[in-house]
Each structure stands twice: as C-alpha cells, then as structure tokens.
Image (cartoon, rainbow, N blue to C red; front, side, top):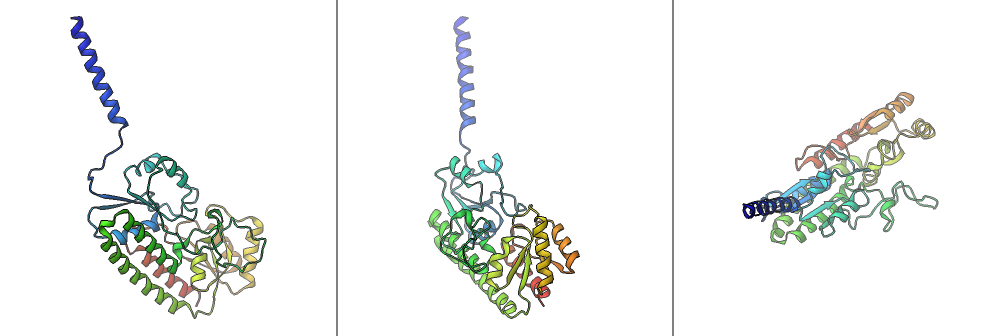
Length: 315
C-alpha cells in the first residue's frame, strides 16, 4: 500500500513539473515557415505594408496601436513587449523616436533591428544647443540622437530613403524574397515620386510661405517645399506653451503675413483656437501621417490632403 502511495506521489510530481516547464517555454509560431516582421509604429508600418504586399509567408504586425501617434515618451505594455518574442526583425523609425528601444534590446539582445532613418540627413530637434550661428532649419552633419528631429518621414524626399532602408532591411532578413521586395519598393517609390512632383509643381510658386505649425513634425515638410516655419505652437504634444511663448506667437502672427495656423488631427487645437481668436488667423489641419487606417496608400492620401489644405491656406 505504501509503495502504491509513493508511485502516485511521484506521478503527480512528474505532471506538475511538466506543466510548469510548459508555462516557462517560449511561445511557438503557428507557422514555423513564416517570417515575422514587426513595425514600431504607424508610418513605419504603412511603408512596410507596401513592401511585403503579396509576399507569401511574411506576416507584418504593428507593435503599437495605429491610433497611438508619435511615440513621445511611449511605454510598451508587457503584452506589446512579449509580441516581439517570435519576431524575425523589428522595423523602427530611429533618431530617438522609440523611447522604449533600450527596454526592447535588454529583453531581446539578438533581435534584428532595421532603422528606417539610417543615413538620412537630420534637422536639429529641441534638445540642441542653439548658442552658435546656424540658419533656422539648416541641415548639418551627423547629430547625436537626442538632438535630432525624428519626424523624417514627413519629408517626401526623405520618406523615399526611408522606404529604401526598410526594403534593404527586409531583404537582409528574408533574402529568399529579394526580387519581390525590390519590385514592390520600385512600384511604391514611383507613386511617391509622382506625388512629390505634383506637390512641388503646386507649392513651389505659392505667394505666402510663412506658416505656424502645431509641433516640430512639419519642419521637414516645410524645408522640402521651402515654406518658412515662423512659429511652433507646441514643441512637444501635450506641453502647452508658456504665457511668454504664447504672447510671442501671437505677436509673430500679427507682425507677419502669416494668417494660417496649422493644427494636427491627432491633438487638441485648444491653444491654436486661442491664437486664432487673438489674431483673426484661420486654423487648418495638416496630417503628419502618424495615425490612421492600415491601407497601404494611407501615407500618399495624407500627403495629398495636406497639399489641398496648403493650397487653400496659402492662396
């Protein structure tokens, strides 16, 4: 009887240890043949969606919700972090946009990370020391990550480099589909080039070029089309200007021919409303393409809509 009891105890212990072992095991892919590609946020996802379109065995997911917007101080949830467990590569914007990147690298030191902004000329961000002479918006050589403006995709020309970097990263991660990635990239870049040409044709000769933007996302866009950012409402979304800064913006609007304020659909336009009331300027919406639907033409539609808004506002 004692022997039977010992056997029963040993059997139970065996199954408990087996169950515990199963709980600690890494999650397995449902399809071990598939290539798992993860994009850090919306503009990276949309670019990648064009490149993986129709490529068999490749699964693209967005690490953050498509309504997140810019990743200013964004913290990954445990579930979002765990979703990288089976990723073959993580596509990121870089230039300091992904504030959570250190945490990702600590948890997955072997993860293949593709940086879309690699090699792209950067503009200075708000962290830069301006105690030396540079023209506003001037592009310089390599800058430290914490000093740059990371919103490179809002420039059409830089976005084309962005797409090429993602293409090259996908080819390195999945060389079996090299030709498809190259073909998809070529087709998408042709669409972007056509839109770029149309936008330059329409905007290169507008008479009013001074604009006031919501935050620094549109510095690259303005440089692309030789528009002059004479004021920025919020240097960081969610951080209202000080009373002194607000007065300065109001005085800038009054002293220039800048009669249009550009807010962004992702954020409240409360401060812009105040400036508009004080100056008589009109508020328009410019979309930095940081949120929206997951259609692969979403970026092109957002930029075309921005063109239509600018033509009305700057007429």
